[in-house]
Image (cartoon, rainbow, N blue to C red):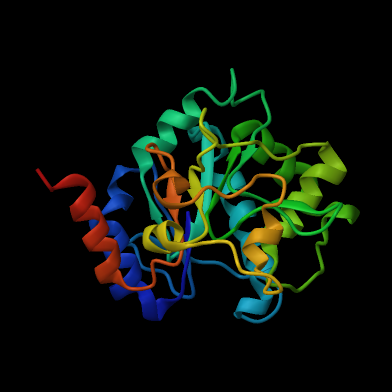
Length: 249
């Protein structure tokens, strides 16, 4: 599932549908206007359609998917329109994540530590819920007093992580490979390859959010079976990366 807006149907969403989107077992865009050709669905949610109200939009998405598609898929993966996903890598990773996704909880993506007590999976890099976890979240969590049902905020990834942890004791999963290389990425491939630790006294939020999982540099930044990359802002970048991955001999 990706969230978007009508004006991006013919740009970002079209690029996704023409590249990685077709590799998913199911695909839906949640937008500001219905469009069966994508397919895109417009959902009503509390508050305005804006970045600072992303949590309410995401709550509506999860509620819709939980109502209409819960029993059709083992796992559900959500992110924004500026994602590039490798569905076969995601499928391969999730295949061994839990024994039975209809019974076992799973909440996985790119782990961040915002503060001493707040951990979450980056919404930008996308995160996955098992069927069992989504059932708990939609049946009980969405309207639970501890799950911020009335809050208007951009930090949807923090909100769902706190909800799952505080209400169901479902924590984060270390999704790195055997060599501690990350699979879910909050930046584009080039940004991860070129990133380096700041020179003190300079500080970097990315470094501070990853203190428990030291960031690997250059070729070690990304696992060979990486799942997702964020900030793919231009449709041409999505198509270019797709061509490099699948059509270069």
